[in-house]
Image (cartoon, rainbow, N blue to C red):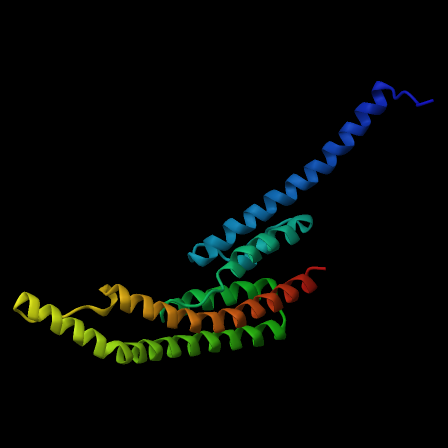
Length: 196
């Protein structure tokens, strides 16, 4: 026969879950605070080191997880030289929570990969323009003949050129994105091994 629980036993079971849930809520809030802190850090409005030191010991790991999730998402192919500052800041932020020589070395290599990508992308653009140049000149001549005046076409306003450009530049990006994904996996393992 099943044992019937008293009201006190049932109430104690429920309050036990509430205590556990309060700890979960505190961890969730610390993680959310970490995300906000990381965004403020990237905007130049916060110092990670001081905030981590001021966080209660039981919430530091969750705070760091929040910081990490925002910073790791910022590791992407740069759009231009302007992204160097952002990527450098991401590296410094990650260094704050992953203080290992392996991470430092990996991030330096990653910055070199970003630089090489920008150089190759610029070179690709020149090569693509040269390859497409004769076809573009042919289109310009045809339009000039039709309109009775000289016409210049911006290659990036020509749908055919844009498709040709995107096809080639996406192949280049694909090669580099594989490298970046591997680096992000390595960074995750450094972070996880440091927070065990």
